[in-house]
Length: 59
Image (cartoon, rainbow, N blue to C red; front, side, top):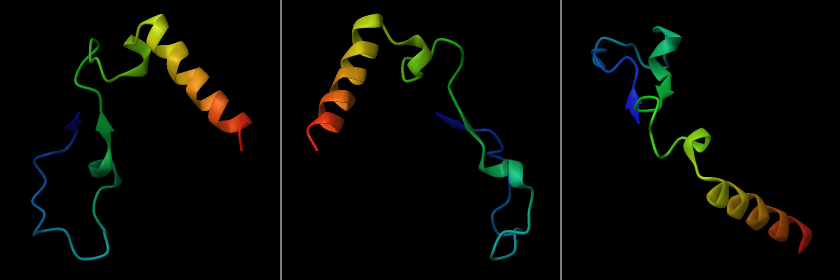
């Protein structure tokens, strides 16, 4: 993943924020990023859903 506003001078931002709030936006590395859940295969999607469901039901 990449930082959307990576060119911000961190020394120029006062402590406690005060800068542009869009500096904290993190996005995917393009449309075909394998880490983006939209691009996962059906098997991987259902494996994650079933894992969360089983863990949720076992508590």
